Length: 128
Image (cartoon, rainbow, N blue to C red; front, side, top):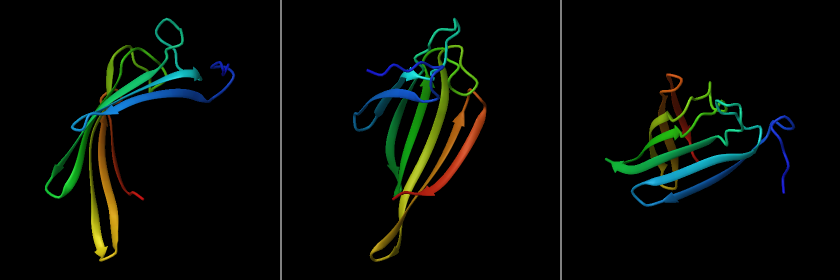
């Protein structure tokens, strides 16, 4: 049994539940202890986030489209939400680039837009 209050720690404890249906994967995350946010009434928000991902192949590239949202009011994420809010619209691509017969670079790129904050991000990297 963990007894952490928001004013006792800067840590959060989060539970995640997800399932991959094949063409679509769904994930739900909820903060259940620690430095969680509060709702409009000032009560613990049990800040939650859910996402739906859909992988697909186009050409020889592996793609993934994702939409994520906060289901209810919380001030934990970004500048806070007053209720349901879409906060992630993403498209990612990955491909292994063959360098030699025995070595390939596993590259990826991802573009993300957060409608809540009107911010966009672009990430490029390698996976190992």
